[in-house]
Image 1 (cartoon, rainbow, N blue to C red):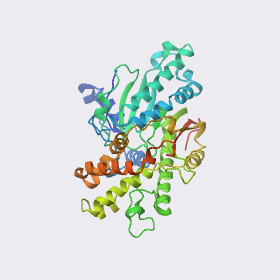
Image 2: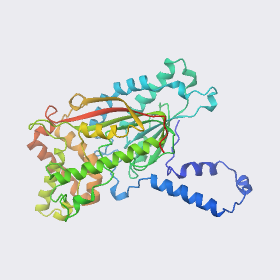
Image 3: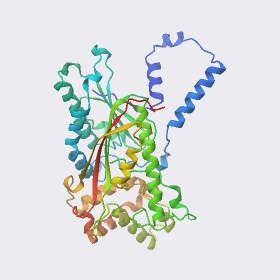
Image 4: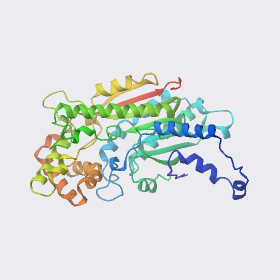
Length: 420
């Protein structure tokens, strides 16, 4: 039961209507000469749509490693799988308490609109399939428990990730026994992706830590936030960390503004934020890993494998915010959303880090694409061999009791009041 449609979200509906007309019907369509007022109206509508879309250049599209090879995300995403497994109970309880099946029953089964679910930051699978199975089965159970088993509408899942994401691998591995139709929607979730008031539930796990773009000032040699000799805000001057934090607030603001327009009234958002929980000096910041990778790149520059200029212009667009920072952002959107549930899950109870090699492979799957784009594919093997040695020298990075990475689980409900 698959509907594979990889189309630009704006063009999709119009192209679908045209395809349903026969050739003779198309010939009978009246040739309308637009009036000046009509042309101005079209221009105005298009301008509004452009303002609502946040376009991310391909150069700043950070997809996970595609395919199904030994270094692919599909083969090296055990940690993300742990996050989804660890939040399964909360997702089930959230839907049980907050999803009302009666809102989706309109008397005539044939007139019922599909339940639309968006998974934002789906990557290439298989983790997105586990999450969607949990959500769709929980929705199905809601209908059954209310005596509405025979009136369950169609369910459509909209899989979203960056334009450079390997959607072919994702759709090749769609579960055969799924209970939903599947659609791909490429693009940045920091902007509008879907028509207004069409989504009933939005899910995102471990994707909201990625920035839509790097702050310009961190590669500006004249800026106090220039991050020369490092690839992240870890152990960097305060100005660098502030630049990351500012970009994160902007991205989250755009994300929430877009979803406020796309969700129906009472629509739900299930979000899982990886967050830093560093308190003691002995705690290990989860972003420490990027400091280690950065030292590997600096070492490679010293022996001439890559240039110092290349290192200075490379930064990882990822942030682990504090719980406080995320809460402040979410509470700032109370005009549109109510916070129904917020719970901190301890990373150490969700994931095991069995070997150095698995740990290194996880980061390689996440970073290889952007490293290849910036430095070239020829340095990747050596870089991650060096990184494996750094991890052995600093084993605390794999100590779950010292690594202060948690997951903030949040359930938001779209308020009925329409956003202007």
